Length: 124
Image (cartoon, rainbow, N blue to C red; front, side, top):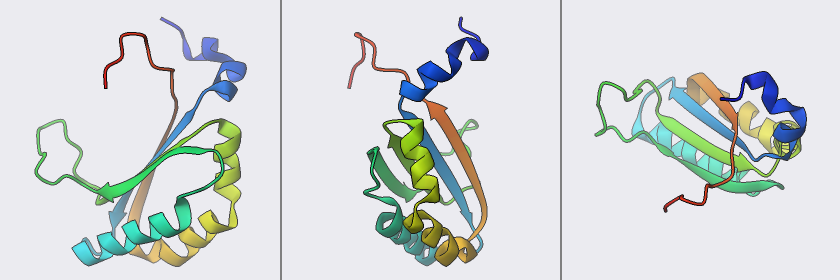
């Protein structure tokens, strides 16, 4: 097993970076969830270096003990590099998204991770 320090910045810099954002709405209504989904699509899609973008609402029917249920909208982005992620963070459209929509959420959690390439035994 590789320790976190063994991964090194050179490997991380070359790896795709997943940026997962989970929003808890201030008013947990379907209307506000749709507003936030629409805003994510408008401001956060199509950024340079993005290899995957999706946004949607929590699958409420999935309620096993391991399911986290304290969020309303999930945003999933994969960037081709950390540099692309860093550029996205400072992009005017990203900053405008935050400014125009922060009143919709009461909480936001971000999970960033480097992704390994697919193994030869990967299935789709």
